[in-house]
Amino acid sequence: MDFHSAWEKALRETNIVRSRVIGLQTFSETQVPYILLSPSTINQGDTVVRTGEVLVHRPSLILPPNIPQLEGFNFEGEDSFKEDSMVNFLMVRGVSLPSMKYDNKIFSLNVFEGKIEDAVGVYGNQLQREENTSTGLIAGPDQVWQLSLLIFVCSQIAKNSSQDIRRLLDEYHQRND
Image (cartoon, rainbow, N blue to C red; front, side, top):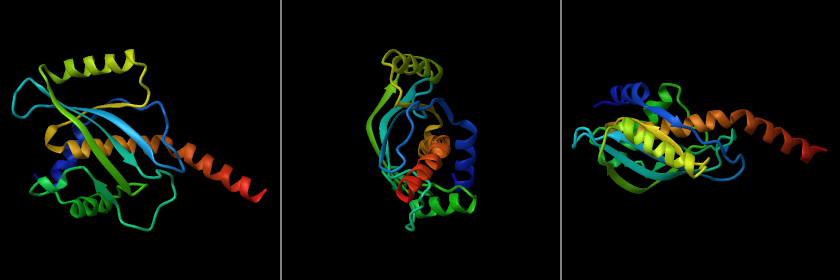
């Protein structure tokens, strides 16, 4: 699958079921735990469950001069997906990743025996029972799970941007008063 098709598939089929309630840190790193559910491409009717966390390095609106870094997204394993090519593809389409450094760590890779709709219900209820406000729940295609995860992280950054601007202004005013 080429980049364009993969991106279109991820945009079309990614569903952020449950967003983080807790915002991202403006001036430091933020750990963004997630549960990513995908219909299994091997066992039809089952669901692949990836749990992990993305460490978003200083996700504020201050853009570092270095190039984007996507660690732990396993683009190396895909024949047509190379990290540099993926970053260039996204930048050409106007998709910028504000912090420019994302480190993904997958903690577990399991199979839920049941359809994705059932898995969404089970994991959504589990997060609700635990009153877990920091973990996101995402559903997306297994072939482009990396892009679904990036879409989720970028949505969290976008959701946080007005808060980041306010914090940046507050810090500026404190230093200049």
